[in-house]
Length: 415
Image (cartoon, rainbow, N blue to C red; front, side, top):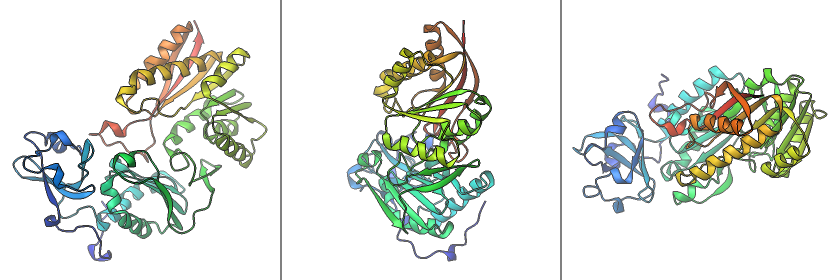
C-alpha cells in the first residue's frame, strides 16, 4: 500500500466531508451486491420514496446507504441513466477528490512499473483500478485520458492535476469522444488538457516501434489490451504466410513479419489505418514482407476464397459485434460468419487466431462458434491456447463486465 500524506495536496474543488454528500438510500436487501464487492447501483435498486431521483443532479457526489441508513461508501450519481450510481470509496474519510485520485494513480502506476520496462501501457482501467468512469493510456510522455461518466467529469480538473503530480507528463489529451458520454448527458470532444499533443506519437512494444495517432486513432490510438496475445503469436509464424483481418495499424501483422513470417497481408476498411500500417512496417524493416488491402473484411475474405488464396495463419480481430443485449443473436451470427470465412482461406493445417472484445459474448460461446464453423466446413478444430486482456487491464472480480477480451488460438485441420 502506498501512503499519501494529506498535507502534500493543494486544496481540491471536490467535497472532502461526508456532510457534503447527499444520501442515496437503497431498497431493502439491495445492498447485497455492494457488500459482496460490486461498485454499481441501478435505478431500480434505489428507495425513491426516501431519496427521490429527481432530487439529484448528474455527477452529484452521494453517500450510498443501506435501507437502514448505514453508510456503504461514497460515490456519485446520474439520475438520468439506468446504471445511475457508482461506489468509489468505502472509507468516508477518502471521497473522490484530488487526494484519492493521486493515491489510486500511484497504486496503479506501481503495478505497471513492475510489469512493463518502458512507459507504454494502460495506466488506469476504470473499475479495475478503483476509478470508475476513467481510462488513461500512457504513451511515454503523453497521457491520453477518457472520461465516460458525469461523476468523473465533475472532477476533471482534479484528474489533470493528479496526473501532473504523479507522472509529470509533457502533455495530456482528453479523448472524450466516446458514445457513452451521450448517455450520460455529456458533450463529445477531443482537446488538449495540457502541453502540446503531436499528430503522431512513437511507441514501443517488445522492441518493435509503432507510430500512432492519439487524436484521430481508434479508442486512444492503440490497443494495449492485446499486447500479451500478440506476444503469443510469435512462435507460430516463422516462415508462414499470414493474413491479418481488421488489422487497424498493423500491430498483429507487423509483429508476425518481425518474427519471421514470409508474407503478411493486412486488411482493413480504413485507408488511413492501412497507411499507418505501411509506415509501421517500414519503421521495423519489414516493408517488403507486409502488403495491405483496403475493403470490408467479409468482402475481402470472399474475394480471397474465390481467388483460391490460402494462408498458414489467419488473425481475426474485429470490433465488438455485440454491443447491446438485443444485438446478441445478430452479433453471434457475425462472429460465426467471419470466422468460418477465415477458415475457408486457411491452409489444410492452419492456425486461426479469433478475437472478441464483446463483453456480452461469453468465452464458451466464441469457442462453440468456432467449432460450429469448422464442422460446417467439414474440418477439425482444436484449441491450442486462450487469452484475455493484459494485466494493465485488471479485472474486478465482482464485475464480470471488466473481463471482456477473448482470444482463441485454434488449429484447423482436414477431417
